[in-house]
Length: 463
Image (cartoon, rainbow, N blue to C red; front, side, top):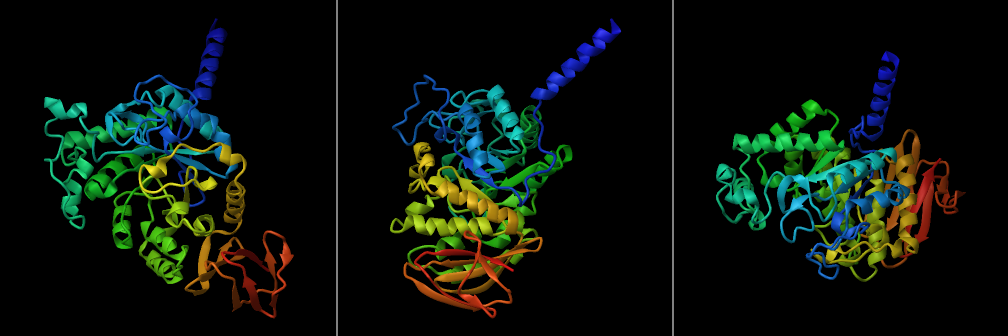
């Protein structure tokens, strides 16, 4: 009987281990590549009959769900992604398809599925060595959230006020962003509630990190308290702070408040100025110089578009795909953590919100050339990207070298819409064209000279 009992216990332990979801032993690092998903707009795998689902309304729920992400994990993996960041899945108020108008911080929105489906998503992602980052909010609730009429929580909110001066930290932290009820994190009950809630999500689901929303609108002192409390339980848990600011000193100040990484809006602005119809590479090089502000620059997150900014291909409609290809090249070959917005790999179009949040075009993934280009960039990044140095640049072209563990590559980008002759000296004995693996004919005796076609990108292996 004892042997039978022991055997049953062993089986139960094994079974529980098969379904358990735990955060990855190693947190998100600069070796990761993040795929960003707007849950409602990615994949509809379980159609529901909720009355507010309308695929034709850009500001309504359109049906994307957690099960849809589960079904597309292999696709995400095929792009070379090692992590996914998904928009908030907590229960939202009316119209909160994006997840940022939360009414219940402990419930999964029925539009997206349920807690068990999310747990399965994390488990299936981990099986594929894909880490999961959940968007998390402590700054505000949704409009008309139940807390607003709860007498026990009447002191949980800052007084209703509009943000007038975006350069005044107090105004930014205490104001109601877009009229969303602003929570008072100096209230000990509010402060502890979100620590407890955050730990509950980690304990229950095994997620690997949070993308922290609207970081600038919450006091730095609370971020220190919040992140320290989570790190005490999960030392490798990852915090990506959304800090919408191009000033690197401000970005670094928030990173030091407990973030492992911040959104690199400074470098985003630089690459946007560099890869467009009137390229200005000086802006990008100037952004490089400001990277010295960061204690750990490589840990920051770099993007070319997202749900808050127009899709890159639509910023410059003429030759948009060419500009975007160059921006992607830079994003993947620079030592930050690249964040790829869903649909960018197929050049989805979209202006300002909500036009940049269209439903994923799955048919295009079978025919567009960019997914294969993303895979090429992934292999280059894995082999060559660790250090970065600019060798030569003019207003419309840039040459830089990337290195990793003795492997060296030159990346040469002609951002001009016209052919251009580019020459430079280098100490290499030979330069190989990475895509063809043959010696470049225009390199001899340490001197390179060649005409690059409009928008051409060269990857040259240094020997």
